[in-house]
Amino acid sequence: MRNKYIFFIIVANILWAFIPIPVSSLFNDVSIFLVVFLRFFVAGLIFFLLAVGFVLLYNKYSSNSPISLETLFKFTIHQNNNFFGFRNLGYFATLGFFGIILQLITYFLALKLTTISLAMIGFSISVIVLVLYQHGVKAEKLDIFKALYIIILVVSIIVIVLVKLEETQISGVEINYGGIFFVVSFGFCLTFFQIAVKKDSYSKIEVEELNKNKIYKLPRLFMKLSLTLLLGVALMFPFTLIILLIPTQTEVTQEIIQFYAQFPDVGLTFLRWEVLFLVFGATVVPYFLVFWASVKWSSYNLTFSQWNSILTIIEPAGGILFGVLIVNEYFPLGYLSIVLFLLLTSIMFRYVHESTNKINAYLLISRKRKIMKDLPLKLLKLNGVISVDSLIGKYDLLVNVRTNSITHFRYLVNEDLRKIDDVSEIKIFFINKIHKLNI
Picture (cartoon, rainbow, N blue to C red):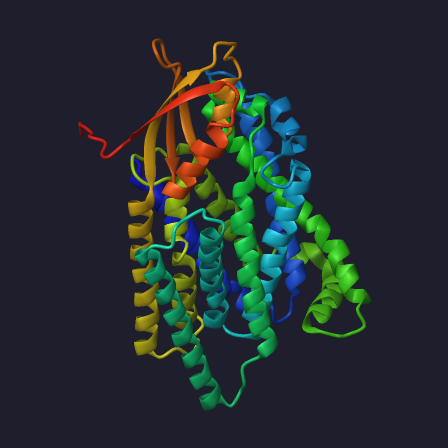
């Protein structure tokens, strides 16, 4: 049943939406940097143990082809051609610090210096910037549904800002513009994460491992996340020391000084229920659900990535709702209803956009008359290629391709496939509808 994996994504986003509730009180006496360190250092260690432990238990109790621990560790030094030719360790470190650690630092500072609803604007900013980026690099076209999607998000931002301006008039406390800077910074860091996280690439050895055992993807994801978190946390220390060298005293400087002062009592801080929730309830559990869904995903319609992007709005919508219901944040019921309606409507428009722009096709490929041993592996490494089957007859390979747009499909065929020396002819068949028999 595929619907349960959509449910996994929904549950993960709801858990992430609950993050502002425990941290709203935690930041009164604990440094943001210490919270970030504990959350991702402990979670990184857990995911490392999960990756290794899963492989050992799977190899011991499963009758299927064993998973190679050597391959699991060696992929970390493989060159990532999708990310400037970095080795995977460099890619993970960059993704971990700029995409996760810096993202969470700016997010938490936005929560501390502004309000929950204002901090949630960062999610909408990220989505808007990402859409414009994809349009700019011709990864996706900006159709009417995506344009409406952006307009709805902009209107929701305007409504939230108007409500917060009204709150300042009532309370007499002005908006912290430094906090607004961190809201925008959080949005851009989240955008970087969403772009960079898709730049992963599989080595030839890993493709062979996946052909033998598709479950290899799960421990690999655990190892990738573990190294991303741990390397990101490691880079946080030189970053804090550089900030301390700057003579200007800022909110960030004060948080860093507090971080080093509280570090000797890190064990006691970890035992607080808020930190335990952040580590397990907001990191280990939701990431495990999302990873499991990505590995087991098998859809005739939208891909895992598409559904994940559609449902991402649940987190800011839930964050605003929880902030009003639990923390009693100021937000009149009428305006709250409008914002939630707009955000939920944006999910519908995003779904329509993804549904109308997806491309599902089969390609018949003829090879040049020489050894074809490496051609299927070359094809499987391309973004958008789902499967490759060998044929007997006029054509040699049957390739299933799924992309998010016709632009991406044209690039895959004309720039990636046709430039492979072993390919001599390509015949394209677009899938209109898949007929299924429900038993």
